[in-house]
Image (cartoon, rainbow, N blue to C red; front, top):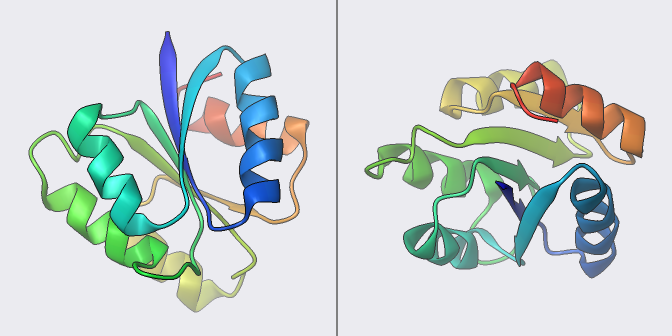
Length: 121
């Protein structure tokens, strides 16, 4: 089964994302910040990471940089899911190792398309 780690400090976003991802056949785990997400990746490296930008403890960019430096950390497809939509943020995310970028708020169809673009769903 495909696995996805949702990393977002918003419980509502995690719940909505979980519902969409589970309907697409993913086994889902959640983390409310980048530090907890790195811990989760130690236990089980996910196939896909749905990643928020602005979070306490460790931002999405900080998480992504740390993830990509770990053994096996180049494997997960990372989709930033954020309100940050300017070109500078998108460029920074891609340079840090993100595979796709989706704007909040998003719906089932939008997330499914982004997952298809990275080879899932």
